[in-house]
Image 1 (cartoon, one colour):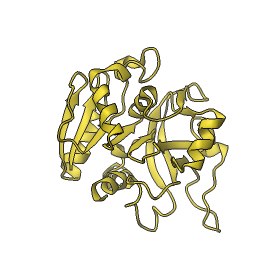
Image 2 (cartoon, rainbow, N blue to C red):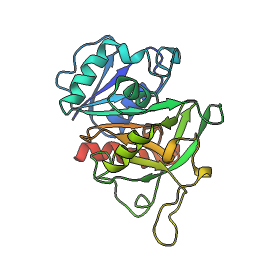
Image 3 (cartoon, rainbow, N blue to C red):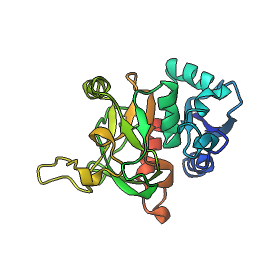
Amino acid sequence: MKWAVIVFPGSNCDHDCYYVLKDVLGQDVCYKWHKDTSLSGIDCVVLPGGFSYGDYLRCGAIARFSPIMNEVIRFANNGGIVIGICNGFQILLESGLLPGAMLRNESLRFICKDVYLSIENRETMFTKGVKGAKTERVLKMPIAHAEGNYFADKETLSNLQKNNQIVFRYCKPEMDDKGINSFTYTDNPNGSIDNIAGICNKKGNVLGMMPHPERAVEQILGGIDGRLIFESVIRQ
């Protein structure tokens, strides 16, 4: 596959994504500057985390108008694969490629820690390849954000649930004795509605998630659960 990592002024996880794709997974990957206007030959686009344009106005609000985003929107609408991580998720919301909005964390503080994720939809190209005893329960990876409190109105939330667009939820580290993931307020780090940590569009080719899979790809960094998401896309 040919991957493109979009670089905005203020991106700070672009090198992490590039490293994972090229050096860990052996993929063909390039950077695309926010002023570029072509995604010719690209199979998958990654919008990385960071603070695009200093998070002025709202997170992702200015980046949404970068020249490259017109091409990302066209690319996604034509079925191209797009992954937005943290700030990238915020940009996808601002651009209208995903529904809903991000609010400040309920604590009004920046949060950086490991969280646990339940895979709510295992039929997406981002999760279908995730296998194994541990990952059948939960995934573990870090978050690092101040505005990760996902919000959607009742109608939007109902549509997300009905269309199986909720891909990840914050959850407890283990399933209960009946093999069911439990979602409680204490497992939700930012106040996101319905414990939502990641969603996809109706077509299933655009994923937005607040946790950072690119920071969980090697055991020396604490785990490889994030790597499984990239590998699932490669194998699809």
